[in-house]
Image (cartoon, rainbow, N blue to C red; front, side, top):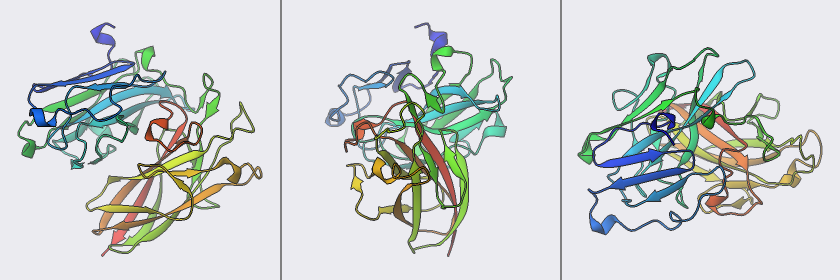
Length: 331
């Protein structure tokens, strides 16, 4: 692949990340030998449409977070959506990188949409996909939208890691909302029975919800799938809540007797919405906040490949829905 077709350009001295359509490699010479053990699962071959992370070096903490441009797609109104994920190279350390010099998007008009809370590399050895996206005009052309993260000063490196989002390369063109190649479609998601619904990776912000610091608030997530390729599609829908932005810690406690995955995902069986055209599956999550302030939460709901409970079941680049939920937390 020619260098100019690679959608991710990263600048660093101690860590080099090469992002291509099917391969992501991380190489470093600065990590002690005691931290060079591979995480189980990193050496396996990626499935079609997936990304293989061949990590030579991982560490529990002290590593950077690298932004990754995932791809682009066309919205129904003709605008384009640029989709980014991130790769936290730590297996244990959660990083908070506030919006500003260390976490910025250019052009400035798009700054502030990105997450500030970065979870460790997921179980099974894959990064966090398409958690942030930006809507650009239909005539965006050859311009770049660049997300830059700076390694925290306490890590001692202070390096910048930048990823440009572009629409000019067809290799990064994603299917949305339907994926004909897999005969599948994104789940429908809503919070209130009579409220608005969200579908697809373009994030819609719902809320605001109200909460008090230190007191758990129950939030019901409702899901269903209407697959035009298969009306009897029995794939479960899996979802998980994440902190996206906010001043304090957020704890998510799944409620009820739904099946759980090892990484905390909740699995909702298809039987709950196949009962009737207007039926929805639902699950309650108890959410608590350590400090008052304004928060954004992200919930990702996606089609589980067969309903198994391993983290590797994520359907890469296919058929999931992002929902941002605003929460106003009082003292």
